[in-house]
Length: 309
Image (cartoon, rainbow, N blue to C red; front, side, top):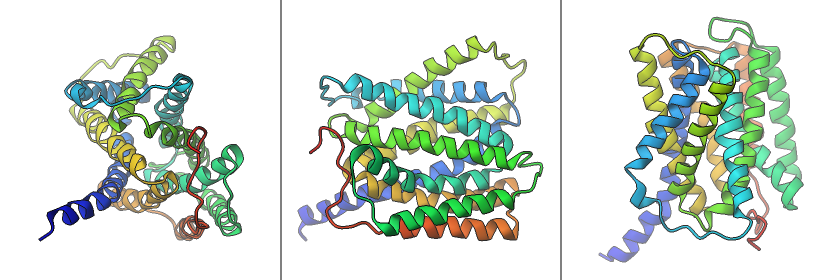
């Protein structure tokens, strides 16, 4: 047996396996956040998540090397962490306070379309008519998802929550575009650790500035959810995703976010007892159809970011 060929085969599949696992973990993040918000204020949950993630990275210091700084990278690194986790987590928290985890997860499928649109607007990348058609179908689906939304215990104000989730996806687009530029020269785990440490500082300052109340009692279920978010999602999902993006084109990597709605809906049904109305199922199918349709990309159009061509 040619072990070299076998090893190369495994290395070719490794980024894709990491991305699938990252999507599964992200699918659970909506559930864990929704659960944690039942016990603690959102700002405490976000702060705790970042602190737990930062503490985890302290045990991985030796794995954060291998970075090559170039002049001008500081602004890209700052932009990356400002988009995500800072703004992204704020909008996602506002979304999950108002809408269900399953609806938020479905809207997350917009990310590949937004990345394609961002690459077209800011990087001059060509986008096919089929991609724009898919984008239009997805937008119609989101409108239908909102029109079919009904206030429930899981989604007290679903329209507002869904719009906040769209805003979170716009932030995730800025994060993905800047991440792809940086991942060519930076260790993906270093970039993930930077997100965690920057997020811990940001939410500490935000908590002090807004005088957010400190929890008066320990609530074990909420703490377990925070630890899970910090370890398995902040460390695990982001680390796996950043590794995947560093090995394959960003346009392909973001396509894996199509799996998030499926994972989220499955977990939401099993763990939270959420369900969608028939109209929302139809709208969700339209969103996914639009996203899948948009994945037809012309040859030789791998995303080219500033400084990479």
